[in-house]
Structures are given as C-alpha cells and as structure tokens.
Amino acid sequence: MNPIAFNIFGIDIRWYGIFIAIGVLLGLLLAYYNCKLKNVDFDMLFDTFFISFPAAIIGARLYYVIFNFQDYKDNLWSALNIREGGLAIHGGLIFGLATAYIYIKKKGESFLKFADVTAPSIILAQGMGRWGNFFNGEAHGEPVSYEFIKHFPAFIQKGMYIEGVYYHPTFLYESIWDICACIILINILKRTSIDGYVIFSYIGLYSLGRFFIEGLRTDSLMFGPIRMAQLVSLLGIASWMIFFIIINYRL
Image (cartoon, rainbow, N blue to C red; front, side, top):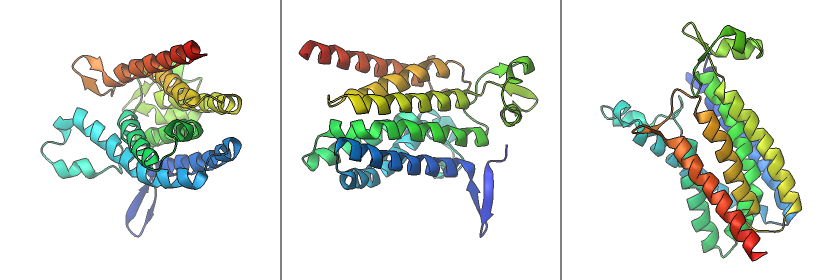
C-alpha cells in the first residue's frame, strides 16, 4: 500500500497521520456525547486533552525508541521523525493518562470521573489509528497461506501481500476488537455510577485483546525474550481484576 495519501506544497501527507486525526476527531465527538450523558464538564475535558495528547505522542515515541534504540543510536535526530510511524500505544497511554491525572487533580476534580467518559473515546481512536499501520505496511502478523487470506476483502489481501508473502492482518484484528470494546464501554458507562468502572474496564478489555493479538505479530518490542506489550497487558488485566475485587468487597 502507498503510505502517502497526497502532497501539499511538496509536503507528503501520510495516511498514518490522517487516521490518527480521524481517531482524535471521532474520539472528541464521542467524549462530548458522553460528557452530556454523565453531566461532566466537556470544556474541562477539552483543556485536558490539549495538554495530555502531546504528552501521549511524546510518550508513545519515547517508548518505541527506547526498545528500538539500535535503530536510532547513530542518528538520534531521526528519533524525532514520527511521520512514518513508530508510536507505541502503551507509552502513549502511560504519559497521556499521567499528564491528565496531574492536571485534573490540580484543578480539584475527580480523575476517575473524567477518565470514565474518555475511555470509550481512547479505544475508538486506537481502532482508527490501526488503519494507519495498514497503509504503512507495519504491525502485521506472521506469514499465512493464500487459503487463509483469501477470506478477507481484496484490498486487505493486497495490503498484506508484502515482498511475495501474505501476512496476518493483525491491525484489522485489533481495530475490530477496539471498536467492539468501545461499544461495550459505552453501554457500561450508561449503566454504572461507580467512578473508575469504565476506565478499568477499558484497561482490562484492551489488554485482553492485545495480549492474544500481540502473540501473532512479528515486530513486537522486546525486553530480552519477553514481548513488552504482552507483559504490560498482563499487568493491565491484573489491575482490572484487582479493581473489581475491591469494588465487590466494598459493596
């Protein structure tokens, strides 16, 4: 697939950036709806977004570069180039949520309340962003046969045919998982009054899907023999379970 959508005044506009922008826009629209639903101040959430989103991008890039430092050590300036990809979602979540927590707490508001209305937006944006990986020809899985890939739409087959080999469209698996999780989270948000219920459900659902999908990928960030995404996902699942144990104990 061609990663470049079009060119403006000599500047290549990439699909990767376009899908990130689409994800952000849809996420903000959904957050506006959810703020109205739960009587949360959208202006406050919007201000938080403009502080935490840049932090998330920095965190996502830093996380990726740390685990691929061999690729950047001879040209550190190239670590600043994110236009061609190279963002790790776990780094983005850590930096983005930490920044949002600090800002919201300084404003004297409940972080969990804001996190709950934002959680469906986060995973929706992630689902959209995965299509940027598709056009970059990255974040795919292991080789598969034509008999397997032929069940997918023709454009998926074409995009996953790389240097004469078909690959698992893991970007698609995660995108579908994320969108389904988004629908589940919206329904949970409508029904619960417990602060933190939705954001921890997001952490658990995303981590559960990512753990299994990551096992199919060929480009995992590694810490020795360990796939970092799977390790972080296990921690996410554990935090989800601990939260629900605490909630049930209190009830």
